[in-house]
Length: 195
Image (cartoon, one colour):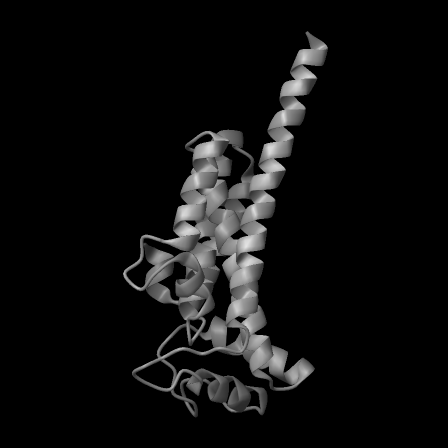
């Protein structure tokens, strides 16, 4: 009986790791394909880089620099510019990390509702085809020009994942994490933090 259970556990772990590895590979492929790419047919997709650069030189957001979103995305990128130098690659890296985090959090939330094969399929669908008008998770997060949507979405998903975990465990740390993530969502894109 123990051998049979351990065989089931090994098979489960194998497929779970293969699925998560597949999702990680999809993220890596999209990041590689979109590295240093700022799509946009209508307007300038790099204006927020100028906002972050001005903030990194000491100007004030909202008073000296116009900005229509929460302060987190602009200040986070400005901090990277201050520490590592201004480069579009840092913006791409932040978007790539937020995309990967959003895919992982999407899986975590869906996995709390469905068995793991269905959760993998649904997460892969969201990552590749997506429910959004503008496209999939990769496009919506990775190619977002202000990073407000990427930060807000990732933090909203983190709020939901932590709240679901709290509901199962009743450990206060998960509730604190859910509240902190909701606060970061508000600081990213206020409407994402309240929904």
